[in-house]
Image 1 (cartoon, helix red, strand yellow):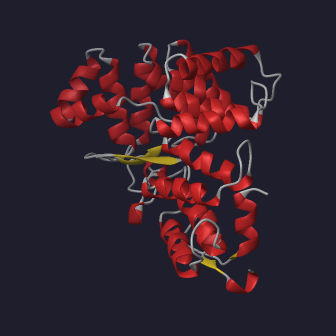
Image 2: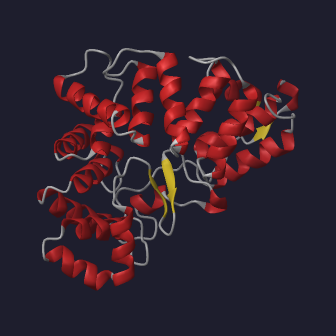
Length: 321
């Protein structure tokens, strides 16, 4: 049984009116709660599910491929200088400037302007820009959701050598083993990046694909091994996936204590799902001493960060154990 299913059975479900609201796609681009910035609000040090904590930037979507060093350079030189480099045809500066405006880092939030900058950089064959514009379309960050448009941009990013684009393309849907040829090619790029270059994120994606049989044969044991490889290399999302494998005995022996250590690591890295899974273990007393109060505190912290699943299950209910 999956951890999320256990959570639904074992935790008291209540309603959190302030959590889980959909972003207003009709809001003005420069509004304080523009779609891009709404996703990354992270009070209490926890990011929403599907987001990662980036130092000096905040919580950003985990599927983005923006160049962190270039963003730091853009911030250090100032918006005007970064914009001048972008207009001179320096694609990474355009991509970095887009990130600053998408997530309101020392500037105003403006997803329309961010998308225009990404489109400009993508036309200059910047794979990171193509990928990040794909994320905006596929996830509705400033646009109506358009998965097909997102996948097209992921494919372009992959063709330009951006491995994250290949990863996002293979993970965009549950393609199955009979995936289209262009997805199979992207899967081969991801597999090579993991096995030949030891790319941690690629190994995490390959593990995800092995776990689900998406564009590659399904193999839970191989998936667990890939998650461990990626986790050991610093991909915290893979640590979370490995923890779930230990909880379920999927490809590895059941080990609740190992799962707890991995979930704590993910939670400490501000990952919402890791905090949710750790809360489940404290509620159940699996791998850690049973502690309903700590479980409830983790759930409420995660709910405050805007995770609707945590809001639906805000407390550990002793009456249901």
